[in-house]
Image (cartoon, rainbow, N blue to C red; front, side, top):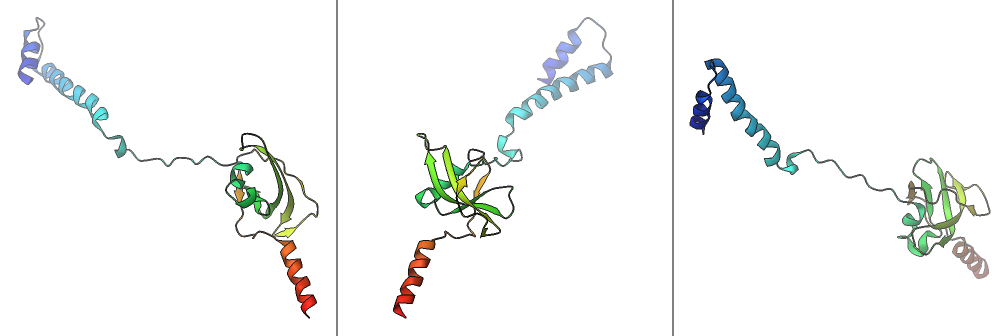
Length: 151
């Protein structure tokens, strides 16, 4: 290959100096090698960027909890110390959208007695709060009533 390039460079009618001839040879040898190197590299050798997880709306978070999350606590990711205890969920036909009602909790304590409609249910920033356990006031009151009758 080098011989054919050299013969082609020499066969030209214009006078070419030795220095210019060597630069042309270097350019010819380096150009295909540089062009071929990106295509021959493995894409796995590039630093792998982690995929961004798609955040979930409240309905998508609740669908994996028992009874669609009724009785469980959920909050938006940027809220600090505020959560909703879900009391009711109305689903649309597609199963990914709907309406939700809940009781506001601040720092783990109830801030309101009556449930209210939760705004921003379809925004993709909801998370499940596992620290606050599912509240079951009916079972705690029935056990205390049974203890009173037993005494």
